[in-house]
Image 1 (tube, helix red, strand yellow):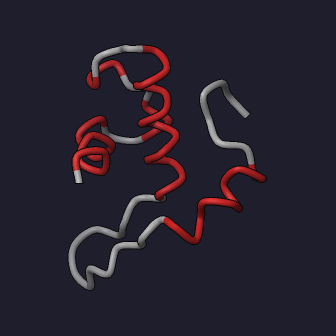
Image 2 (cartoon, rainbow, N blue to C red; image 1 turned 90 degrees about the vertical axis):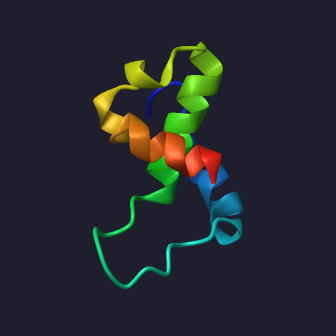
Length: 68
């Protein structure tokens, strides 16, 4: 568990509230927990999106999740 990431207990509480992608074509959807952890990292550190660590995936994908 890294700093600024959801603990299992926290994720279990909010998981039912997070919509899953219903897209049938294209790339498989990103893990919503990973996307949220990336957003929390950005908000907690104040870093620009391009400095998001690779473990959260593409900064463009995380920013898109944040923007939707």
